[in-house]
Amino acid sequence: MKKIIIVGDNLALKLSKKLNTEVILTEERIFPDGEIKPRLKKETSAQTAVLIIQKKQKENINDYLLRFYLLSCKLKENYQKVIGILPYLPYARQDTYFLEGDPFSLKYIAEMIESKLDVFITVNMHEHRKKINEVFNIENHNLSVFKFYAEKYFSKINKTKNLILVGPDDEAKHFVNDFRKGVDLPYYIFEKERDFKTGKVNFKKPNFDFANKDVLILDDIISSGGTIIKVVKILKEVKAKSLSLGICHGLFSPEFVKNIAPYNISQIIVSNSVENTSSNYDITEMIASFLEQKLLIK
Ligand code: R5P
Image (tube, rainbow, N blue to C red):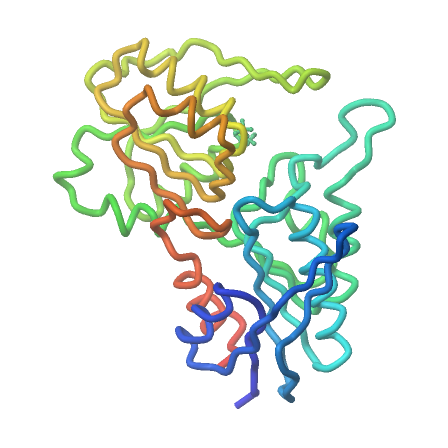
């Protein structure tokens, strides 16, 4: 048996309990100018290290990314194989050059991350114009929570009788398809248009009768909430009976929390890929079984 060690924060602790393996927790010092120094609380020997880091609710994504990078550099010095798990991959939406002079951020971030890892794993990466294996050159895996959401929350037939799945845009079709691997339900994908200069999005009126339907909107990210609130508003106008949300990365800005409140959402399913006080799906369940079955780490 290959000896592995799990490294990181509270997700690492949960994962190590599920896999029944040793864990090394990390701690961090932040200097007055914002520089971070994440460190391993102890050093041990093992063949493989699995690093998993959760984005804290209020921190900047750059701190989260840099913490992950500095810790993977450190682990690469000590272990033969380093598997890095970054449940929320920042910069994935900048997956091309939209305007003249733009950076291809996803590509550059992937180059930085993979330089210190042997395997990279993320969860519901925003795969719009680029798939994960088009930007990473090391072994890579993009796991999806949506099949598990279906099995955990909607597998009882009486709950799903009148339910329709909604994807806010074409990119969300993957999430709808993943959900339908767990419970096969009818679906509708909205048509979205984005102005790349202002970032503003607009939706075409749906060509479907939502009256008296229970609707579950599936999407990878809620950040400002701009996208989801627009879809929710349209669905209310076309007289949907109830609205629920199934979201992977709940970045939930204060603006989103304030603006969604009047809409009386029945249920929000959201994972702990990002630290979130309302999370109700633990991604370490899915990650533990993936590591055991696919990467044969035990
Ligand atoms: C966009 O295509 C994504 O899938 C999400 O819909 C979007 O990133 C959500 O961001 P926000 O909440 O800021 O509208």
